[in-house]
Amino acid sequence: MADIQAFGVANAGTFNANVVDNDGDPSTVLDAALDFKVTCDWQLSGFLVGALAGNFELAAYVESIGPGREQQIGTPPNVTVTVPITGVANYGPIDISVPANTLPDQNALAGDSGVYKLITVLSHRNTFGNFSDVSAFVEGPILRIS
Image 1: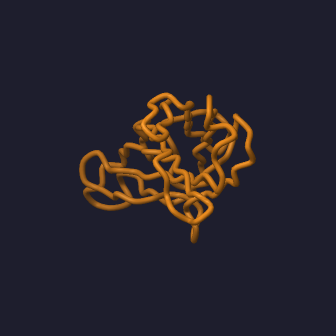
Image 2 (image 1 turned 90 degrees about the horizontal axis):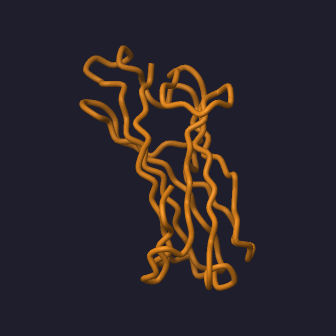
């Protein structure tokens, strides 16, 4: 869980991101040949509930621990999930779907570790299409792809 930062206010809400494997269980050890998802939800507090317009955007990135890939993950071709702002305090669950074989296991490519740190990002894009200062970042978990 992470705090949402908004216009200099550190605790303007909370943001959660959890990895769920293909059978619906939370997991950090995933089969490379199966889909998984990052399920996100967030809660706004105070002035933000009625003050924002535009869209929220969700994105997930992985960084290899040791040799391997660093990339944005999610369903191609648009790997950023857009969620319209509706003036409510609670959003989600919203999934970032990750197709099978997006991340190789340690045996698929010589030298890849098969271990990745996940970073999930919540951003706000206003009605003019510009990013605002409203954002949150969930760092982790560490994923093992087998």
